[in-house]
Picture 1 (cartoon, rainbow, N blue to C red):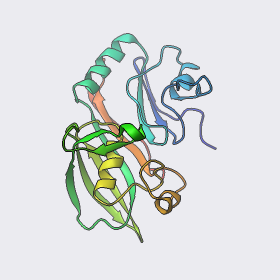
Picture 2 (picture 1 turned 135 degrees about the vertical axis):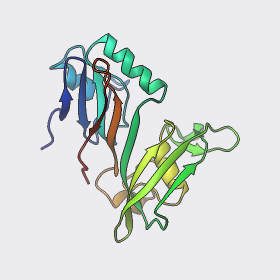
Picture 3 (picture 1 turned 45 degrees about the vertical axis):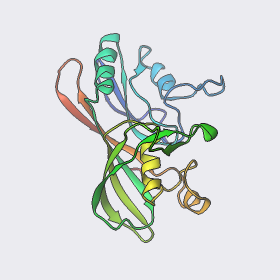
Picture 4 (picture 1 turned 60 degrees about the horizontal axis):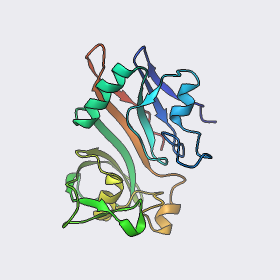
Length: 209
């Protein structure tokens, strides 16, 4: 059974958790979508506020601030790309090269929101570094480092190079979606400068797949 809240670290300023797949980061617009990481955190830490988000089906490291000062300092790091992030994924097929960079502009697919698409005319610059970790029978385990932070960036970039993320309800074909019991996308590492100690620290969430 998954924990109500999987705490990786907590101090006077920050709460770092490992979000499970299938749970929202913040409440949804519909009143029924109240259960989320922020709600659960506030049952113990009433001042907890989300500094960033992960998609519902993505698991991994999330940081919440426990006071306004911490929220401002951490939020500024996300805004100015002073954080470091890496993700673990399992994608369909065997990736031939060992590493590379996807550099493809992304834009909203307005007829199919919230889906995104590669758009060379109107898309925003988007880059993802990737490295193969392991080749399985008909799948590849990879480490992804987003150099930009576009919506669905990792999902669309993997699909664009012909290796969609397994279990992806938005971009995978039926067989690729059914090949995994959840989206095979995990925010494995998040690094940022602590708002009080000013030490750069990287938090790690264990690989769930």
